[in-house]
Image (cartoon, rainbow over all chains, first blue to last red):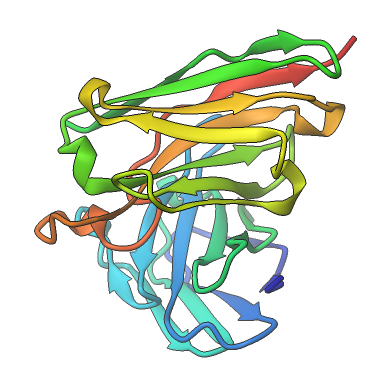
Length: 107
Length: 126
């Protein structure tokens, strides 16, 4: 199975900050990666697909990059509604696997 | 507005069975792969199963193979997850989500998990 790791596992930030989350795959997955945001008690929502394509309706302060084994999600100008947990997902090879999540908390 | 509505969750004893349903509205259901994803209490997300538009391709995570069955009824715009031989570790919120669609104009139909339901809680306990 492809293992997905995320760093950091949590971070504290302030409104207006720039935040970067890294996701690494244990083997190459091309650009078959998505990023998902989950607020407490809610279903996940997709932010980014194909590693760098912004989902329609998602604010442009979210961006994704990378291919192969290393990927990043960047949130520029962090907003109050962005405090949540973020997951990456590889869908290159079965079984699909999610990263363990990165919790973005208020500093 | 696209809605995915899961139902069927509840409390079941270890070794028991349960069937989950997910009814879709607001999208051309038959053009989408469909999936189930689960989340144990306080834990991360785990992909469970996928089914292609016509049911011709099905995949499961190893932990549920031989115990869970995914199927769909395009006329009813619904996908189902039949779960048997349930274990305590199957306790989770189960979400249905969409996969790739042959409708290229819907960007949420590009790749996996563009739309999600609100989830239904399955608790396996004696």
